[in-house]
Image 1 (cartoon, helix red, strand yellow):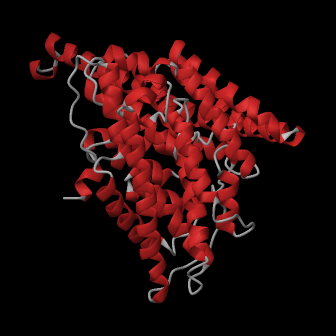
Image 2 (cartoon, rainbow, N blue to C red):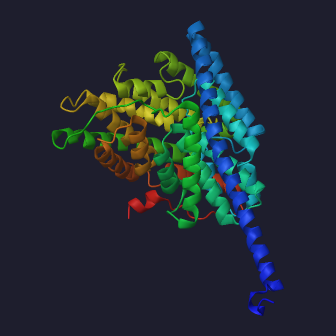
Image 3 (cartoon, rainbow, N blue to C red):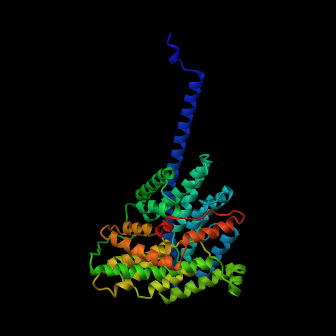
Length: 458
């Protein structure tokens, strides 16, 4: 007969059963999270394909007759605004402010509505409608909201009730969306830390890193290990060439900071009769924005339509030349597109504006490689708009597969960030998230949005 010390008691057996059950639940949840990350990658690739098809349809229409855009763009933006305001509230704008706001909301019923799968599907369809119509928008910001929606839904299906863990999944989904959209896994991680999170917290970082890796691998498996803007080998040796770092940082900071300040000011409402007209006739205002976009597009030969990806790639690779006015017209088209209220992001258009600005600056700096100046302009403007210098640096570095220029990129990005902060004291996405919080939950006092960019200043 075995000694009494080795005979399992009822209490120890119950403890073993509970431990085994908890382990089973934990693994079941992990498998669901991993499946959700795969789904984020699949959806991001499908979204990219749909966006390309929408751009192809727009190009076909322009080949038939460029003047058709005077009809297509106003009608497309009006329809998108009407659908957003009538059926899909929460789908408007970039999608990044929604993801940030949902990480600060206490009322999870509002989060469930904003990150519902029907809103995510509408975000994809309406962004593609905007691209077909010729709006200067991107798909990367919307992919952040879509990724956050997928992971939030997975958390609900897994029976997750802990608010901290729910927010961790939202952050992981948003970061995975960036990684899959750009094929930039490091940028996805940095974006999750710098833009979506307050700090790098151990209890949530593992989930984010895992989701970024899995969604990134999924995207690579489907479309290959491509680089968004190809491969560049430009360098900025220490010396006179670093004048380009200063010039691009200052000019990019001024342009990006003014752009952000304008968007933040407009998001708070325009006073006077014009502001009342926008609030009372949003669909008509969107149509007028579409008409303005069509006119700008006709003046520029269609260069300002869509994401601007092809133009940015051509400028960065040096395969085509664009007039100095391109980046100004593209900036104006992006501002009008965002003010119209349609779903669509700022990432790709901002990269395009920055590349155009860098190409213009390169004419005045013959002692520096033109390709390097273009990259510096791209990262400077992008960092100034988003006020996320680390994310901007890593995104541009990974998109061009060029580590030789990393230090110069970072210096230009942080200089542009400082100039932008002097013009716009609040980070764009954080300010837009606060506005979204107040409109989504007016009775709830939102938490202060302190992001990593706020810590750069201190």
